[in-house]
Amino acid sequence: MKEKKSESKPIAKKPAIKKIVRKSIPEEVKKEPVVSLVSLHNLKSPFGSHKKRKLLGRGSSSGHGKTSTRGSKGQTSRAGRHFYLGFEGGQSPLIRRMPKRGFVSNFKKVYQIVNLADLNSIKEAVITPLLLKQSGLIKDESALIKILGNGSIKNAVTIQAHAFSKRASSEIASAGGKAEILNV
Image 1 (cartoon, rainbow, N blue to C red):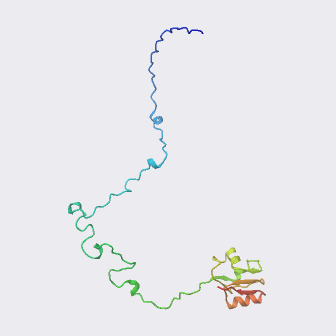
Image 2 (image 1 turned 135 degrees about the vertical axis):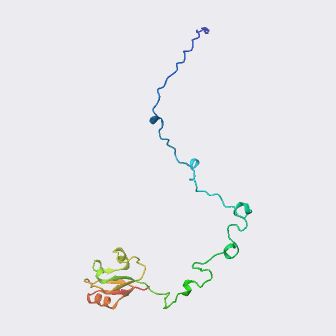
Image 3 (image 1 turned 45 degrees about the vertical axis):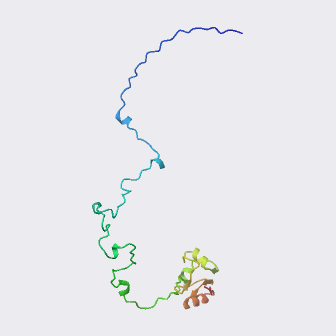
């Protein structure tokens, strides 16, 4: 085996530290915009979004003592007071003072109206509620449809609807078509 020779290296002197003189950086360059990502840990609510809770009934020196900002006595000072819409403080409400006349049926049938002149734009042999909806003549295919006799129909077509006026059904028959009444 070879033995290692112990060599003594001369101790090197540390180089002298030179001071680095930096040139002054202009103020415009120093102030770069700071970009920070919004995250849950750095969100802050805006000033005024959280008001301090009003402490009530804590003595007269608090400013909200004695009646606890509710005034004195009566219906509005009590807990659990609720007024219905149109309440006028015990006076007979306007809705009860107004005269009511006539009759409004709960079972009134509301039809979607289609005129014969509008049906001329459809080039099908059988006109169904679905076809009327697709052509934009009605809004809801499941609602009631009534065909009125304004205008005239040129083609012999079968029309399916829930109701027909007398003039509409006679115009359809005279054109060689057929009026089919759908059950509700």
